[in-house]
Amino acid sequence: GESVGLHLPTLSVQEGDNSIINCAYSNSASDYFIWYKQESGKGPQFIIDIRSNMDKRQGQRVTVLLNKTVKHLSLQIAATQPGDSAVYFCAEGVTGGFKTIFGAGTRLFVKA
Amino acid sequence: NAGVMQNPRHLVRRRGQEARLRCSPMKGHSHVYWYRQLPEEGLKFMVYLQKENIIDESGMPKERFSAEFPKEGPSILRIQQVVRGDSAAYFCASSPTRDSTYEQYFGPGTRLTVT
Picture 1: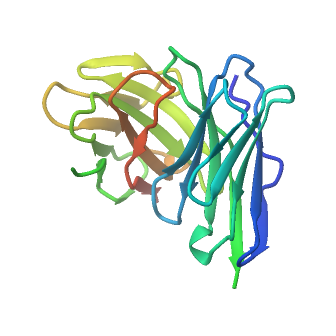
Picture 2: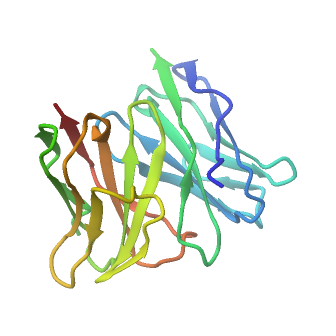
């Protein structure tokens, strides 16, 4: 069912610190996970993805970690900047399927 | 290469009127998804369409809501006899493939307000 959820609805960090946003999922069949960033008044924007055959994937200032044992996904943002302030959603999909399930989102506040 | 286009960006309707939301996918994309987002909530899947076909409308209310993606022109989400509970942001996303293990590209959304 639709059960991608997040542990923290809001997160406030100091500029320059690292941010960690967490996500739990319950569909064991999901093998593809995505993080989206949504700024106020805009549509979601792709940040990074990871497939279930990986535990970690790095992008520019972002890292996604996948723990399939406990069905947990996290997004790490290094040296958080004011421009990172947004709502972050995790989402999951299944190879061969077409429905992407979104979590509830975490709002990230970056304090200058 | 223009991204996903949605119009109007803002739409105000009185209760009982009809709302038509349009979505033009990215060039080369033939798969369109519609999502609904209430304030401070995540995106809820509504419907998935390919050109001229509705593939999955399991997330769409059975009454008053309909969607189409004609051979020519944009995809349209239509809400008849709107009620206040329909007030939300409606997002369209497109993809070049039906596989959910592929990034979807989102439009800016249409914010519907029912008065």
